[in-house]
Image (cartoon, rainbow, N blue to C red; front, side, top):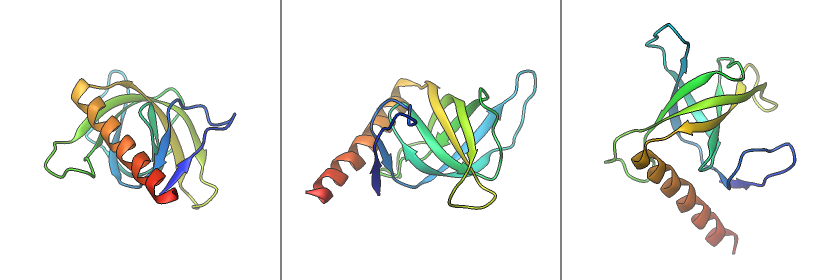
Length: 131
């Protein structure tokens, strides 16, 4: 697990942790409904957004629903939030895979607490490991 520092090209607010776990993502297209969920792996996550890998290309500005299980507590229900795609680029590391950056826009209070708990648990764990 690596903490990814913010650089000028790295615009998401908040400290990030690179802890890989599975999420489900559904694109929201106005006027249509879909049962399709993209099963993806998180590259990094912060209180403000997430970067995940996908075989699907996401257009910047697309609204999405993100659902994930809390890797710290298997008893907790899924975390669910809405976000907007800020960029989608070809992965430098994996062929035919995109890296999709999403800013969280609507997060229910309970999900917000869980995301905060996940991020700060792994930040604290990483700081202990680096000492």
